[in-house]
Length: 208
Image 1 (cartoon, rainbow, N blue to C red):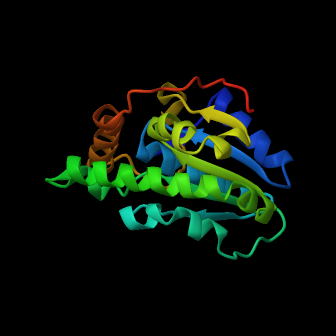
Image 2: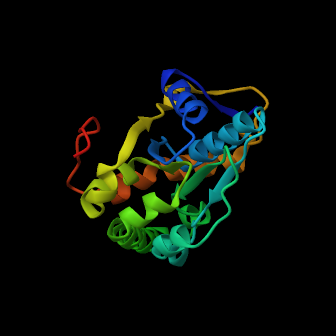
């Protein structure tokens, strides 16, 4: 058994990928880290059907996400039809560490720093990307990004939220729903409750 994204929101994301051939910033909000990984694998499989590729930038470690802007501004090959996936969620190992709360606070601070730095380089980032870009994370990304990176947030094409009840078990995906993955999913579901900022922005706010 595997987690398989489905539903209206998922179809909306696939339509964007099918139609876009230039820079479009999509914010993808997933119910957990495990679901985000399932969505990444499903996107990759979908693009592969049409001879396209998914370029994955996965700054899961604290220092990697702190230097997110530098990684995104560094020269990267961009073959025709390629989509860039950027994971904005922590390494699942942080969720099970004995000092996980402190580590997650550190990761969240680093994420805020990385997004703020990318905000300062918004124009260069958009100019250098000739392909759709998916920033994927949990609701923590939705809470924090508009606050620390308002200019980056303003150029988004869409915010797509995948509901947990529209992601089903089954199919031929690559993520097994075994005890270890279930444990990580449960831990990641608690991440947002433990670190949720006080301020929350409206999901359907129009870009400036």
